[in-house]
Length: 419
Ligand code: EPU
Image (cartoon, rainbow, N blue to C red):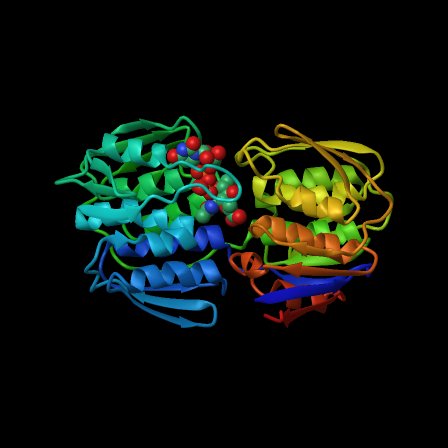
């Protein structure tokens, strides 16, 4: 198993180009099984989660060819409709095949994802929406078994604006008979990106990116060539790195519109931010002010940036409170940050952070994707050596992160840990 070793303390500077968004690529690749034919996806990040969805599709008879950041997919021979436990266990986003399988094959058998390190993460809203569309849903032996003679448009109110739930229901509804209205839909940019691809395929979706999405069912879809949007969480991670290390980084190939909540908060910390035609430039170096954040569905502050922002607050001047409102257990990075000298107290879904002058390098363990990114950031600012184990979590969602940080001047390397 690989480890990442960091000698902290260097202000990072230079330019970095952001990769395609994992959480946009996953539903877009899943959407390819809605119809048979040849798809091309560009700007696909090279990641473990992308391998996972590709393997899942291959096992269903889909031909997948990856050439760097371009993925060719031929869905003509899709012949299975199952996502087995072994695959869903490795990546819960495998649930994204449920909607498209049901729409095309009229049946699907997908393992229930179960909980994960950051929370219970039920899928009741996906299943409730699908049954409103006319699917017969059974839970049996840890699997969701869904079938439908014909899906029919319906009014669906989501109790919570679930991201993958909105995506699953949008994909199921595009081939349904009649009109579906999703209310309290998630507004994340990845939803609008998926709707953009589906509309290019011939779907009729309006309002994606707003809380009300209207989907008029169509009879047929066609394969397309499409490009994955930039990863706003990767971009945000580099922006925090600039502020944290007192550096000066131009984050290229990102969409500043998707980063407004973070830009607003980073400015309050004292970082200088310039939105330019070629990217977002973040300059740190002065005093870091303590700023409170609360995570919320988009356009609120993203839960996927909470752990990284916490590292910045750990070395800020004064006290801050971070409230996690999306996942019930997303503070698992805190105990590792405490081992590096951070002064953080947890009470329910609030973390009280008292800034300290310095973090100190330590051996730490990654526990989930964004927690791993926070440990890398902590290592970059800490005095001495940080050794991060279980970095396979990082590889699920960040493309060549340590190489990108090395190019910005960090002393960081990946080593193969001794067994
Ligand atoms: N929820 C329910 N019932 C449901 C669905 C969700 O109660 O049927 C709850 C969840 O337990 C959670 C909240 O609703 O408390 C929001 O969860 P959501 O469904 O929106 O999350 P998700 O779709 O499972 C996606 C991203 C996550 C990201 C969240 C929130 C993908 C593949 N995953 O997850 O990304 O944190 O939205 O923005 O898009 C990551 O990339 O590290 C990651 C975890």
